[in-house]
Length: 351
Image (cartoon, rainbow, N blue to C red):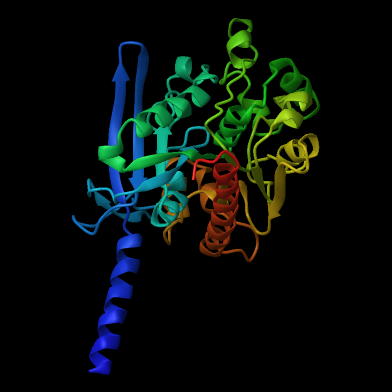
């Protein structure tokens, strides 16, 4: 009898793990007369109902397991919005999205028009200010869609971004971008990866100066995670020092591949921010691309054949293993967000 009881308890435990490892998953397209079309991918805590499928995988990259359109779990859930890098997409950070959804978060990621893999329209790419607006729009949508994803805990909303997405979430935290500051810095570092995007992102165009320099702070966001960001030297020191929410800045230690030196990007943010508001760490063995999804065996050859040079996205630092880097990052990001959002919620009495 005891053996049967233990077996049943073990079965329930394993079943719960399986359910947690397969969050609900929906993809929607936002469109209304006042705003441009925006594609959004959402992971969310779900019931055990529905099939499980692998999404985000292809011959080069490993995806994650989800339950498409599964009913959301009851209750109120924290929200994490994710911003991908330049010419990236929602798949790049699906590993952290699925992990945080398994912890009870609703996780939503838009594909930013103009700077996403399948939409590189040069006109949209120059609307850099649209990126933080996309994230705020996604927050509005998720909050207003409890039947699709579950109810959002409005006192526990965070943002995470990689590369240009790291710039995006810093902007949402209150950092103000000054194009002339960035251009002046690039005169000393013309070969740096983000400096080579000045024209493509419209940073040097006078018509966009007012919009790109605007205050994009979204006060609903209570914590931010910036992963090896670009364009950081364009943020004004005054605005960085004025940020009043917790920020976790994680930089790549092996930064030569993308030519985004930690000391000039993440290090700049850390140096100008209030030390009491930020945590800064250089991730050992990580390249700029280690924050992307896992690569399959032979992926470098596949990518290089399709586009010579793209094999670098599968390269990590010497003796480093991307799966280990990800596990370390999941623990670090989870601990930071849970602590920061719990504190934020308790401080305003929302819980």
